Image (tube, rainbow, N blue to C red):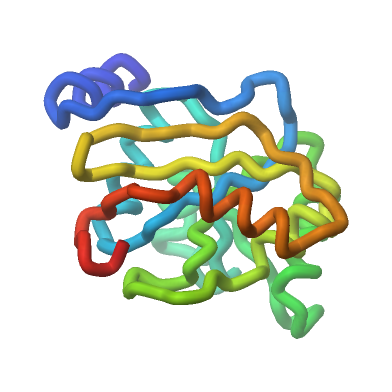
Length: 179
């Protein structure tokens, strides 16, 4: 599977990567921006399989019931049961704590439209689970995936967000006006 995915992602689609996902870490949060198009998910899946990255995404528990639950799990989906808690961040931190290895990928924007301010859930998930954040982006302009080193959060949220935003400067998503 990896060989086919690498051929498709790097040769047929023409993407290249700068940096790599940390193989030595068992747990971290991956944030990807800008999220401007539904194709971001498909390109992300191609990258996941090309790099054998055991990344997960979160979905409501009802998605993981038959008949399609197996497929969502195969793609890296992890269900969260929100009936036990109204706090989604807390529920996801519980998922981190329940696994020896867990890598969560998500978009800090929370939508495919242009946003002025990111949502903060990813930050509080990483903080609550005591895990670093790895940033990555699909720069469609250059067909380049840029991956950061793990970033360990400080006690200064404003400075942390400045660091995150600096990483994404000049990146063009699939829909440039939403970048």
